[in-house]
Length: 77
Image 1 (spheres, rainbow, N blue to C red):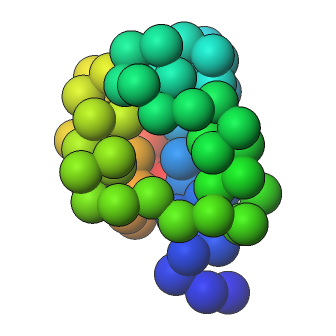
Image 2 (image 1 turned 180 degrees about the vertical axis):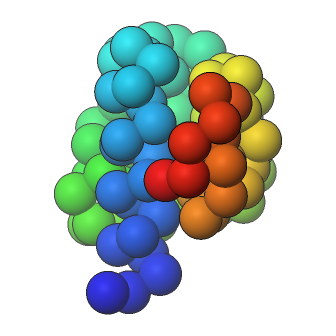
């Protein structure tokens, strides 16, 4: 599995677990909802700055949202 695909899956899983919609993330970060959808489905990449804004909006660290680290809630993703 590619790193990009893994990041997409981790992001989606955590986003859904905390109950954040793509529309919410878009509103909080200024990143178009369609780009978030494309990222989740492996058709677009996000810049490091976009990832930081998303992590902040979700109340997570960059590593928790996009890496294979423990996220707030204590479970490995």
